[in-house]
Image (spheres, rainbow, N blue to C red):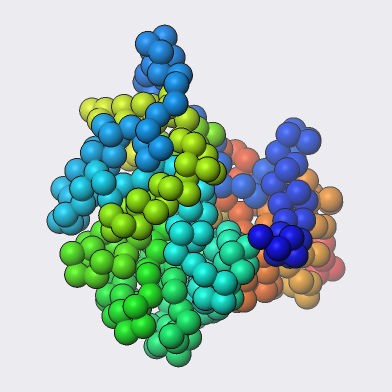
Length: 384
C-alpha cells in the first residue's frame, strides 16, 4: 500500500479533541461518543465467569458459532430476513468491520458514495484503499436526510459502495423506508453494494428505525455493520459484526485471518450473554430514555444560547449551527481553551458540516447543564 495514502489520512483533529480524554479531568468531554452509563453489572459478571472458565484462547476467525447463530436469528426474527450464521462475521468493533468490508470489496479507482455530514471513517477508509470518496451533502433544511435524486446524480459505473448510517452520526437523522428503498433501487442500477452502519439502532426517539436487513431478500448486495458498543455500553470491549452474502463474508474472513486473527474471546462470550439476557431490553430502554432526556435538555440549552438546532431523531449527538461570525474550527478551539468544553468542529464530518459542531448528549445531565451554561456565556461574550 503506497505510503502516501496513509500520509493523507486526516487524524490531527482526533489528537486535538479525542485524545484529551485522559489529559485533563477538568474538561467537560462532549466530543467522543462514549456513553457515561457503564456496562451492566450482569455482563461484567459474565465476563469474569468466562475468564474463570477459560474463555481466554483464540476463537474461530469468523467468531464463535453460538454468537454468529444468535445474531442471525435475531435479524431473521426482527426483519424477516433469511440470514444464516455463515452470513455473519464477528470483528473487533464496527469500525474494524467496515475496514474489512472496504478492503474486501474495493479496488483502486472505485468510488464510494458517502452522505455528509457523516462519520469521518467512511471517507478516510475509501482514501486508504485508494478509492475516490464521493460526498453527497444532506441539507439542514431537510433535517439532514438524503435525497435519492442526489444519489442518482452521484453514482456511475465506478460506484462500488453507497454507505448508509441511520441513525446518523453526527446529525441524528433517521432514514425512513421510502428513502432506504429508493437508495437500494439506485444502487441496483449500477450493481453497487449498500453498506448500512446501524450501530445506533437502539437510539431512536422519533420516527422508526429501519434496518437494511429488511431488504436482504430483495437485493443481495446489502451489507449490515453493527456492534455491541452503543447498544450495551460496551465501547471498550471491541466487538462488532458484519452481515453479508456468504461469498463476501468468506473473503472478509480470509482478510481477518491476517489483520486480527480473531475478535477477543471474552468480549464475544460477553456479547452473547448480552443478547440472550432476559434483561437486555430493560438495559436498552434505560439507556434510550437517558439519552432522550439528555437530547431534550441539551437542545433547549443550545437554543437558549442562541444557536440553531435541528432536534436529532436518533443517535448520541446534536449538530447545532453556529450563529456567530466564526468558523467551526475556531469556535471549538476557543470553546475548549476558554470554557473547557470539548466538542468537534462540523467540517470534520465532510461537506455540509461547515459552521456546525458536534457534541454528545449521552453523558451525565449535570455535565450537559454546565456545558450549556459555558456555551451560552461564550456566545454572549462573543456578541458583545
